[in-house]
Amino acid sequence: MATHAYYVPPVNLMGIGCLQDAAPLIEQMVIRKALVVTDHTLVISGVAERVLSMLRTAGVDYVVYDEVQPNPTCHQVHEGLQVFQKHGCDAIVSIGGGSPQDAAKAIGIVAANGGHIREYEGLHQSKYKSVPLVAVNTTAGTSSEVTMNYVITDEERKVKMVMVDRNCLVDLSVNDPELMLNKPASLTAATGMDALTHAVEAMVTPGGFTVTSATAAAAVKLIFEYLPRAVKDGTDLEAREYMTYACFLGGIAFNNAGLGYVHAMAHQLGGVYDLPHGVCNAMLLPYVEELNAKHVPDKFRHIAKAIGMDVKERTDEECADYVITAIRELAREVGIPEKLSELGVYNPDVELLASNAMKDACAPGNPYQPSKDEVMDLFRKII
Image (cartoon, rainbow, N blue to C red; front, side, top):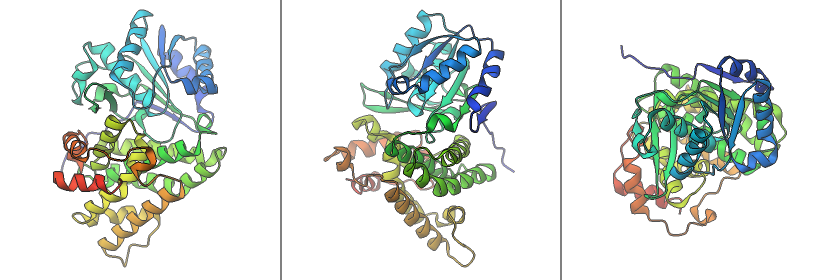
């Protein structure tokens, strides 16, 4: 029997109103001063203030770094690190979706280990655990708050660096759906399709096992049921709550199973053209899985069942076709663009994108290893 390691943050709060339950737990962490990592939008909208109020209740002093932008860069990581060091911080609290979460984990790793963030690209490159991290999530998509993955854009090389490091796991994650209300429909759709990509890739990767497949299947079921509702009505609290569960379930699945070529390719589109990660995943997902299905059709039977298909009398190929069609229909229903031209990219360098994708840390997790020509053809399908 194979041995499987399973990584997950030690404490994870979820459910309506759970933000307030974080205060006593943070108080027990005995934080002297925290660096709060977030973005301008969350500050302006008042979402960040709700978390800052909770920190004050916990008796935590803090300083705010709110310069994180989508696809956080090396510059933002080291700028945040300077604030951390200047103010004598000893912990980090992140507020936001994947970008603030990733930036916070990167700052925490460099704060504990020194050097430049580029030194930590790849698998488990740090020696010491990050400074204490509390992750307050505001979108149901990236799952960065519960994974040991983070992605930082090297603006000089125009490459998204993928870091997989057990030392970046947060000490406390908070998934309160009340913080996710009234988010734009486009953001809800993109992050939700990102969560679906996590779950699907976790189910087809050879690195998956019984536990990860079970949580990923549960995530798939919830996303197909509740994402359209969350996109249609930004105030649908029930839909938001179930999407937080889906995000968590898919996150802990891929955190321990791995991802594949959807993420490997999407990272390049983000790194070179600064495109939204969730949208890129959603555009690529049906095409990559269409290719995978030609080689491992049996991997799609459990996904089809999770979506709602009666698989008893169906072949593996029929199950795969059902899954891919359902993914395309869901993407259209929630308004995901189908072509890069809709995002302002008309003539991408597919050779560069393919070359970089094949070097991406997620690529080895794909069940089929495509040739460079096949990867270029996949990119061409979304031009």
